[in-house]
Amino acid sequence: MTWHISIEVDRASSDSLTKQIQEAIRCRIAEGILHAGTRLPSTRQLASDLGVSRSVAVEAYEQLTAEGYLTCLQGSGTRVADRANGEISTNADPLREAEPAVPVHWDLRTGRANVTNFPRVEWLACYRTVLAAAGRDELDYPKVAGLPLLRDSLAGYLGRVRGVRSSVETVMVTAGFAQGLSLLCEALPRFGIRKLAIEDPGHNNQRRFIEECGMRTVPVPLDGEGVDVDRLAATGARAVLVTPAHQFPTGITMSPARRQALVRWAQDVDGLIIEDDYDGEFWFDQSHRPSSLQELAPDQVIYAGTASKALVPGLRLGWLAVPPHLSALLSKVRSRHDLGSDGITQRAFSELITSGMLDRHLRRVRSRYRSRREAFTQAVELHLPCAGIVGSSAGLHAYLQLPADIEESPLVEAALRRSVLVHGGKRYQFTPGERPPALVVGYSTLPLAGIAESMFAIRDAVDEQRAARGRFATGGPVAHRRAGQRKAVHSRS
Ligand SMILES: Cc1ncc(COP(=O)(O)O)c(C=O)c1O
Image 1 (cartoon, rainbow, N blue to C red):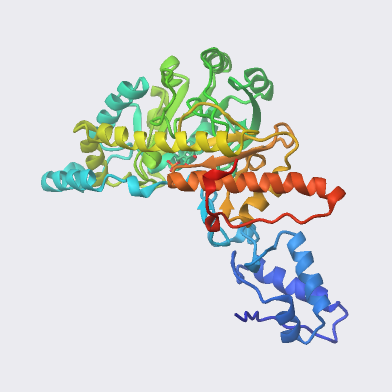
Image 2: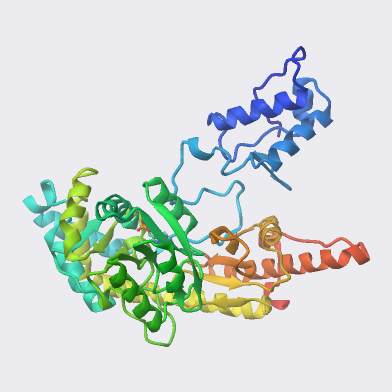
């Protein structure tokens, strides 16, 4: 296949030909003319199109690759890099992962929904019931905080399954946690809070989102029990965003003692804790699932939940249970953004909860995700016994800590060469160098065989890296294969 690019060089210019090519490509990327993932001509083709020597084209591409504008992967040529468009990208969507630049066999990134689990039949039944009975409440402008009927069902449901203390007055229905977080970022400055402490490691895209919403973020390190409360106190922040049930990304569950200390901190500084309970429905450990942090201090904790993992993200349904003094302010802030969420969907969701269909659905999908989690644990034990899974057996992802001799970024690249897309732990660290190498593995969308295959491919990549270190002595090449092309995956460890 021959690819072309529309650029020109000026032989009369005082700038070198290499510099002109670089500038032309850089400009087109910055202006959004060349999009992320776009394939560029080979250096041979570019040189021939522009009538320059091949070394000029090679030098231009090498420099642009080093600057992060281009990526060059074996077998897929040179492409515009994912993040090359930066701030001015037309798809700038801070909470979403970009699509991979190259098709991959196994995508282990987190935050990807398994949409095949969506309970279509039950949802349709709820919609039918609601449409048959829909009246003014559902068809007219809804209340910005949400339909009282749904807020009431949610308050009952959250009390029952997560120990949340709330009522129809303190629950707000949002378009996912994303909207809840943006409303909070707008409301908190009214209380003199302009700085939000976040867990380190934490959700890198969420950090960007918070900063784009106008709040400053202060990363606070974690230990094995959760966020370090002494370090938090030292930041001077009066609000913190935490994931106590299943920390993102490390999977740690906040200990009872740390919960008490965190609540005491919030009371001392007259502050607020935002509890992001993004995957609290999925707990696979034999031990008792801890209930919400909010239960301990409903005046200090804003509980946030979402339908994105329990159902699907496309519904854009989430909820906040807020301290009573925040309810009116949040509705006021919300009314400047939109006039509330779709009434029919809200009523259908209420029906799903009160009919018991949500509980039945969750029991079903919990058992599917438990099987995936078990398959993942077994695959790690079999293929990567040198690695250790950190945190609780819960949620839809796991944090895989690697031996200290492994170099994380080269391993991620080597996995990609085997058609396995996985993110390294560093991606989520705000203070580099504090933690051992790791991989953050999302297993919710993979078939069981895919979990085993991808762990095998990562093992192959680990072996390659270790052998390459030894190769300085021996000089022999190390072969690798695409994960999808391999046979007898289970026969080697
Ligand atoms: C840490 C974390 N919080 C919250 C969410 C859910 O966000 P939303 O409800 O906006 O889909 C996710 C989704 O992947 C997440 O990873």
